[in-house]
Image (tube, rainbow, N blue to C red):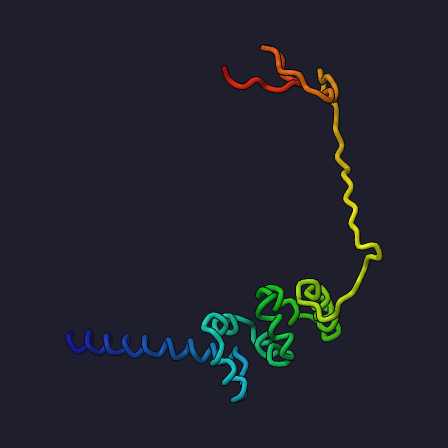
Length: 163
């Protein structure tokens, strides 16, 4: 009986050590195989970026390496994972249009290299468009010089303060 227990314990131990190896093998099958140069860049990333990269589908991992340096910076700094995967799932023509749209949207937040003048006078005119709606029992606009409020008066007068 002791031999049976020892043998089953040893078998369980071997089975448990094989599970992580299978899980790693499954993970490798779904990861993009990087070149040596790509792997060197990958190792220089922060731990957070490496974890984010590993969570992407294989197609997103592969697509990332086709981006130019400007697109890679936008990819990390401006897009979330949902947006990244959405771009990857697009047809090539749609991707090009998406990147043009992203660049034009970010152009307003990035520092401009050219200066331009849009106003000839240089003076800005601000106008108010507030609308006042009368309420029931309203006495209308206050007079130019407001009187001190009487004991039961609340509108169009200056509060006397606490007594």
